[in-house]
View 1: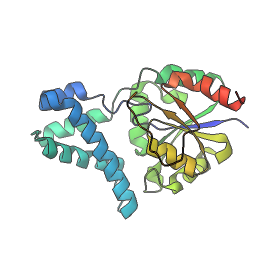
View 2 (view 1 turned 60 degrees about the vertical axis):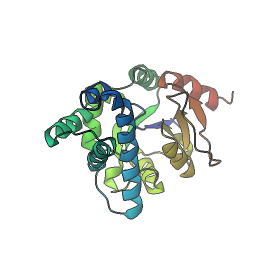
View 3 (view 1 turned 90 degrees about the vertical axis):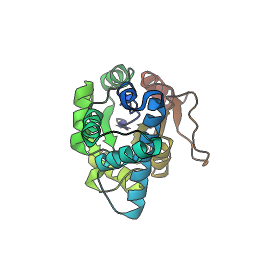
View 4 (view 1 turned 120 degrees about the vertical axis):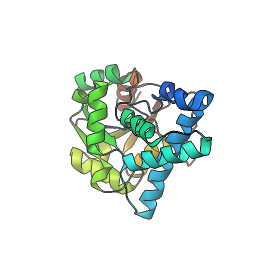
Length: 228
């Protein structure tokens, strides 16, 4: 059976720190720390809303995380400036290895889907602006379930929408929580270790394969599938 690949979007295909240069206008030397905290709070708020069953979209989590980060870092940004940053967040850049890695996998016959915490319209906008939307058969959003990764329900939702089974479906993600969630739900998973300093959570649940860039994914998959 043809292998189905579910690509996480934020942090795996799309660089969530792609606004650092713009953030320097407001945060100066704190720009990188500001970007890191914004991302951490964005994820934390999605986790908390999922557990509380008090759903708001990922865009709302992103906006609230920006508000928190401004306060925590003591960076005064006006409502108009926040709105501009959030609009730019809809057009974050893709990582340099995304297009060539996806193209190789598409040409090799894999079934590619984008699978995201973001709403479908936000993900469509991101992928179109990044020039990679045509590589995917479709976009699957957790927004359909009003929940977030790593709830097991959202991985089952992906399999239903993609017409795949866990044995023949892989998640591809740079986020350890996402990899662990997918493996726990019966999928295989490739962890994209985008930073040499990244640490995988020591839960005893490991990624099926680990790579440092999407340009390595086809070769790593083929080696695994052939039993090498």
